[in-house]
Amino acid sequence: MKKITTISSVFLLSLVLTGCNMFQTADSYQDESRKIINYLLADMPLPDDAQIQKVPTVILGTGTGIAGRIVLDSPVSPASNLIFYSDSTLGTGWSLISSTVAEEIVLTYTKDGRYATIEILKTAQPGLFGGESSSQITISVVHPSAIQDQNPYASLKPQLQGQNAIAATE
Image (cartoon, rainbow, N blue to C red; front, side):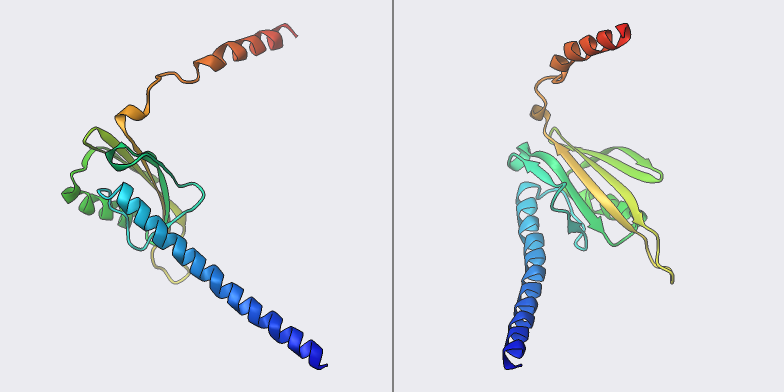
């Protein structure tokens, strides 16, 4: 009986320590990601309450030569995020060149030859007792020299035409 109690105690202790470590790792990822993104894209504001999504986020390059995509989950509505970006980009040098405000909000900015597209989508309805819906924010940034070849998929064309010709004769 004492052996079972000891094993149970060790199991519970390891479970508690592992659980704490998982939360620390998630917080650590957010902190480290924000440091990197703030370094690479210091001039693009990010909402403080938004959480960076690990898997779809990718950033290439450094300084003003970066290109990539940052995906954030925000606990506030698309309308609140629209207001945030409208206010917070004014002093950063980014100029709004295009906007679409509908079910999906799309804002396109330019600065020093770079382009940033901010897409804001509603992800959840307000709760039973009201409040704001949540949203997903995708920020895509491209540097003008990031695209060298205007048709990088041209080499696929002959293969597809050959396959279509075979399918048409069958």
